[in-house]
Length: 130
Image (tube, rainbow, N blue to C red; front, side, top):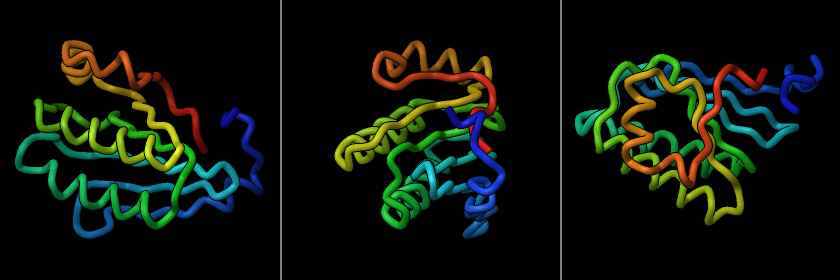
């Protein structure tokens, strides 16, 4: 349970904010092998390629057991975002890990539910990591 992550474990968190001039934040919690990606922009055909590339780089760098995509600041997402999520899901599964979507806004949640992606990727509410 990540709520009970100790202070010492939280200090082992590597934080990388707005790396590469993008509106993405990465937190890697070594002890939990957890990569949290906070996306802070709209996800559409203009942004998905750079988001995908950056997330893939961080997954390759840390080889996490779990990746959480935090959508709290995503106000809009279209079908290109669904494709980007499914690609990350396949990559993580191939590495033996799991992907979770957290804090999806109402509009984004509707897109996720209509796409059927919620049948394979769980949606969570509330910040469950450090």
